[in-house]
Length: 240
Image 1: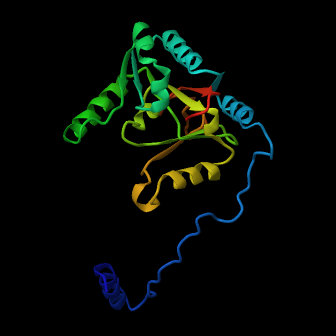
Image 2: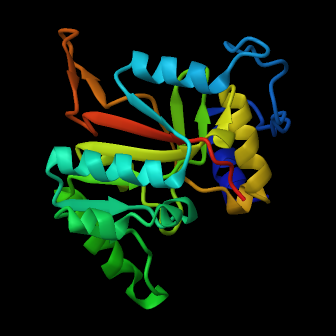
Image 3: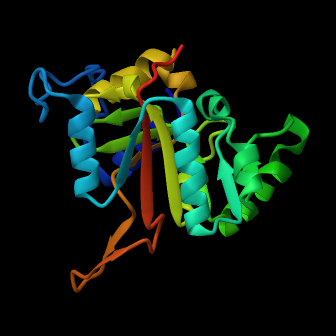
């Protein structure tokens, strides 16, 4: 008998009531058939754009990495960005955007975790930078067409603060990262996470449009508890 069971047994004896504990059956991997809001054969990229723009997000469809880099650089100039913090990401690296942003007057910082001995100091440094950043630049783990939602997992080099703290969040995704439903997105996480109990990240963020906050008087305010702008750059080039 474990210490927990022994403790509960003593409580039951003292109260002379209660039921013996029992272990619930393991939950199924999926709870039956999932209802999809996306119709069969629907253009997922078009559905994604319609849904995301419908909640105040912005979608830029581009065909090449050079166009994606130009869009982000132009946006940073329009916003007068002085500090940009970005994910450590292979996709963002292919944009080769750091030099262009710096030429436009922005200081670019990559959310790299640093060595094990300096990890705590590095995290605090990144938090301080994010608190004053003008733009957070991230990739995505999936984009969900049925609701226009970005899925981002927190991992080393992919701090969740990049998509939460700056007033402007810019995400870059490939069209082959679009999935139809939430169930599809979570299935991808299970497949790439290996042993789910051991390796799955403790933080998965779902972002649908700019941050919105409603008060008790039903007044909706944008950008109070997160970015007031969300820009998705959708790249038609497939990944390797």
